[in-house]
Image 1 (cartoon, rainbow, N blue to C red):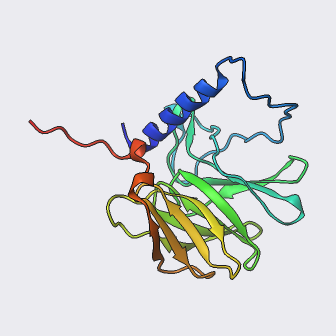
Image 2 (image 1 turned 180 degrees about the vertical axis):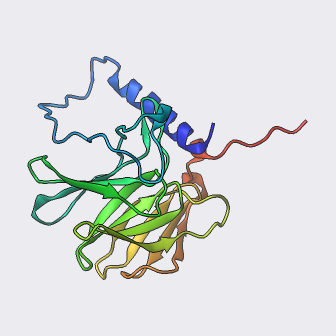
Length: 210
């Protein structure tokens, strides 16, 4: 079982636990569906069971100017894993699908993202490739923003944020590192490392020795 399936399995167990009835269960209040991820054909890849088109779960959401909502595909659904490039979905503030297009060069497993006002672009963490992509949502173009070095294991990038001067910080949960780049990206500088915070549940399996 690879680290992506382990990651998904652990999330499923956690959500199942949250769904269990309890006298002190979390009151979600009134919940409404905001948008529905449409079926699509993965660029350069395929759907599970060789289906012509399929849906994908999502794990990251970002809001841009005028309330536009962006969400990339994480590359899994109830039938298994998708292959090829990830897909970016763009929704209006009322939940209407505006457009969707592939993130060229990416793995299927896109996760966290932020809207960078200075470039009017999205920075998207690629969990499967250890990279951050810079995507112009209007021109639908993709360029490489950052590649995480391999220090102790395969990188596992997931969340991004900014500081007041526009520097970008990217969490690497597989290596327990926070990477930092200037606003324009490039070679990242190693920031904080906390070994106890690495995501041990999602490591690639090791081969048993006899």
